[in-house]
Length: 356
Ligand code: NAD
Ligand code: DAU
Image (cartoon, rainbow, N blue to C red; front, side, top):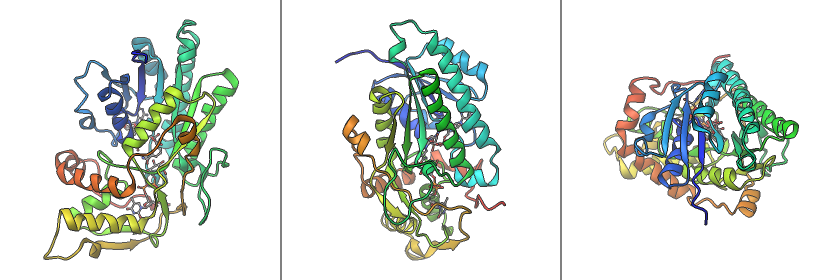
């Protein structure tokens, strides 16, 4: 087995999935990581405390829309590849204001592609064939499923929200860079992630923290929309496999085969909160469930067929929803020092995504 440890630029490494990926790569001795992050509201360097002093980890605060800044990172670190996660990621915020989504997700990806392509073209022959650019995308580019069927890599793009449209556009740029310039890029499209260090605007951490604060649990519409949940560490492992073994020009779907309706997810959180943070005088946490106005353009169902990733690259999710959600609830109960500053500062739990 080779003891070569590649140097990889991870964009968005201070976010939810990016920080899990940095911890996995550096903590597991798999790669040297340069975390390139603008530090938006969604970033949290505290999520990287376990690796911040490692000689295999460096951080540069750079906006991916700043081409010169990005090129500077390539010159400074001479990487073997890129894992591109930096994005505006929250659907509800994209409904309230799409500009930053178009800028970062579309134009930022364009700047990343151009900086990486220029660097890759100048690489010496020995290093050029091994260079890889992994673009981390979402299953939301495929739009909404009906009651049956799964998203395959061949499913036509049909995005519904400003967020998913901006991610779909960025996927198309990446594919074009491969077809036109032979640029060694690969794309992953993943379903809903959950786990520790998840910003509390998203469904699962919001429900946990609202339970703790005895606040209503806002369920959009009837709560019958379906998401396919994947524990974030399983996604990090998939991304490493795809970066290191995936074929350039290919797409790989990533998903945990864990479909749940939103109301099932919220009820499960309530049951775990009843067990680990009981509130006997007030009663069970399900009393807090409140049905609220639906999200505009709300996709009904997402579900991933991950056969290609499983058979071609040997990936398999280690957590199922029951084990992963229990770990997640317990992590939030034990890590108030991580989430309290967020609630006190950039996001207190207010409803997003209703502006028209
Ligand atoms: P996140 O919102 O938690 O983190 C995004 C990170 O990107 C933050 O640290 C932020 O500071 C950084 N960033 C934003 N704009 C930037 C810019 N202009 N320049 C540099 N850095 C910038 O997001 P996440 O949930 O960790 O998602 C990461 C990626 O994975 C995104 O590309 C997202 O589309 C994709 N994805 C997410 C999920 C999910 O369930 N969360 C599922 C599939 C795919
Ligand atoms: O499918 C992958 C996508 O999953 C990623 O690309 C996105 O970056 C990520 O944010 C996530 O998007 P969703 O819109 O599915 O996640 P969110 O947590 O916002 O919502 C999950 C479901 O729960 C969705 O059907 C809307 C619903 N919801 C959400 C919130 C915040 C509620 O019912 N109430 C809420 O308060």
